[in-house]
Structure formats: C-alpha cells, structure tokens
Image 1 (cartoon, rainbow over the protein chains, first blue to last red):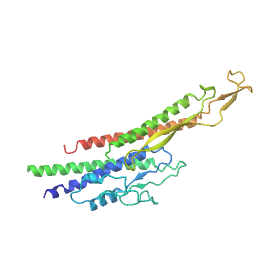
Image 2 (cartoon, rainbow over the protein chains, first blue to last red; image 1 turned 45 degrees about the vertical axis):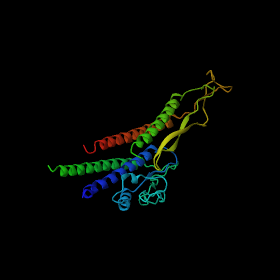
Image 3 (tube, chains in turn yellow, blue; image 1 turned 180 degrees about the vertical axis):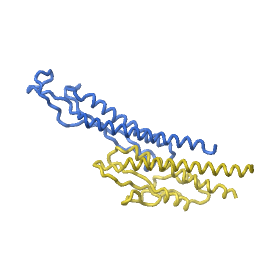
Image 4 (cartoon, rainbow over the protein chains, first blue to last red; image 1 turned 120 degrees about the horizontal axis):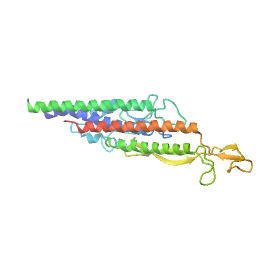
Length: 149
Length: 134
C-alpha cells in the first residue's frame, strides 16, 4: 500500500541522483575546456534512467546508482561503464559514459565545445530543479493524504 | 559522489586560470624589458594545463603542470647609445608578443567566468535541494 504511494517518489529520486551525476560530469568538461588532449564526457540520460528503472528491484536504494569506476560488474545494479565508443553523434552507448566528438577540430585535440557544454549544463540544471519540484509536490500530496485535511 | 565535488573541479579550474592570468600579467609588464635578473632579456612564459582525476571516472579537474619559456628570438633594435647595447650596437628586448598576450588574457578571463558560473549554479541547486520537503 505504502509502496504505491512512494513509488513515484522513488523514480524521481533516481532521476535526481542521475541529474546530479550529469551535472558533475558537465562541470568537469567546462573546467577542462582549455586542457590540451582532454576528451569531453557525457551520458545519455534517457537510456541510463530507463536502464536503472528496469534493472532495479523495488527495494533498490539510490546508493546503488553510484557510477562505479570498476566496470560495474561487482553489483548487478551498478551502471556498466567504459564499453562504449564514440560514434558520429555526440553520444553513443546506453547507460554508459561516452566520449564527445569534436564539433570544430582543434590542434590540441581537445573535444570540449564550450557552447554545447554550457547549453547542456543549463538544461541539466533546469531539469534538476524540475525533478526537485516533482519530489516536493509528491511529498506534499502524500502528507496531505496522511493528514486527511 | 555528490554534487559537492563540482566545487573542487571548478575551483581547480578557476585557480589554474588565475595562474594563467598571472603569467599573462607578468608577460605584459615585461613587454619592453631589456634585461632580466640573469642579464638576459625577459622570455615570454606560458602555463601548461593538465587534467587531474578527482574521484569518479569522468570527474576531472585541472592543474598547471608547468610553466614554459618561449624560445622565440629576442627583438633586436639598433640603438648604439643604449647602455645595454652589444658590440654591434643592438639592444635585445623581450620576446613577448602583446597581441598574443591580450588574446590569452581574454580567453583566461572568459574561462574563469564560465567556471564561476558553474559553481554558482551548483550552489543554487544544492541550496534548493536543502529546502526539499519544506
């Protein structure tokens, strides 16, 4: 019964953890915009979230969502990393960290496109905030259901 | 790993860019220097950025791995009356290119601003997360 109430919250909390993860990765990209040889990283949010909600059982904790550097094979709920390769598009692979490709090739082989990263960063922060609002609204709904007023 | 490490990542980038600005400032100050502490004319300096892993796989900060000196030949100007003139009457000035330095300065200040912006966004998101459920 209570699981029905909180299942929506559970989904949004997973999305929130993923958004925070992506925010961190995009911050790394922006920080390394001038580092020679740095390759931009990112992941496909939609695919990763659907993979997590598919594989996670009802008792899964958000802590299991932590992106683990060690290939992810130690725990079935860990994300698998490092098996994708960059394709013609900016992203490839499902649920894995991918490499960004150069939009304007530069001599120092840095593949950070600052415009792209900043747009992604702002987009991601707005979506993070909207997820926060979803959680807030749902918890208020649950509270008012409990109080019955 | 929480969003707190954004402050470490962007903070490292900000301090690296600040060091780059410092180097640009010393280059600009020495554009017309004839002799440095070693008796030679001033050589233009450049910072070298390097990625530093910070925790997770894609969490990477920046550090200045070293400062290099330019090997471009010094500017030589014929001025026999100058006290630093050599036997042929030429004075060696520093090899700083002011145009390059200005471009470098603009690039560094823009990157600095970008990273400050990132930290501000992360801060406001974390504050909103703290208010969750209130």
